[in-house]
Image (cartoon, rainbow, N blue to C red):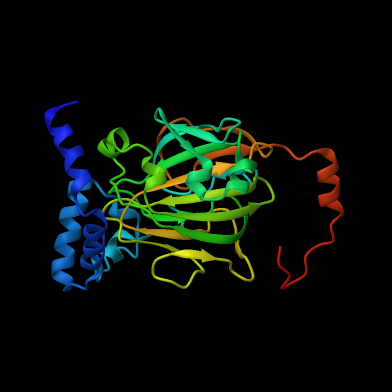
Length: 299
């Protein structure tokens, strides 16, 4: 370990990380004059190589840095791969790791072990996911920071889990044991016909002001929310936002995942990530025999 890396790691342990993150969040949400925001966006975009051609609306000044950071994409800029049996990346970023949990519910991300129970905060659900697949997508400062449904289904529960705000970068990964389970998280319970009970976990980080979920009327998800009716989503629908930061972890139950189709590396929202197991002939027969939905009915 280099001297500078060691010094940075030690500094992280004593910094008031939550206070810094709250202060930065407030600063980023402050409305600024249009000329100042244009300058900030221009400097930031050049520094981090942000592709503003994809932004929507193009050329319209942002009122705050948070508005810029949570910008939308132009329609059609992220086509969805495959069909409903194809799970897509929920975000732009870099796939840090993909793999399988062991029989005891432990996943290994870049050589570091994490238990699913600690990650999602639910012992019974963690048992269901043991032996299943996981994928970790890191969103860098240059990336689009909205999170989308990796598969079609219903979000039946959303839970904010309090935690620290260590940076999710090389220093944090190497020097903070249990980084992903120490940091603040938002866990979505997504029930999918093709992929089963999927965990979508948004992991916060230092400087991450807030995490929000579509359909949950709160500026920062905390505690447990059980929406009624459940939040229906099609594959690719927006389901959440990072107001700065960080990482999305997907966990798929073992009896629904056939295989992952992508190795670690850069990825865009909408690109293929995994394939569901084919339905058994009996399930396909039952699906064909179901009565068609009428207007206004819910899946």
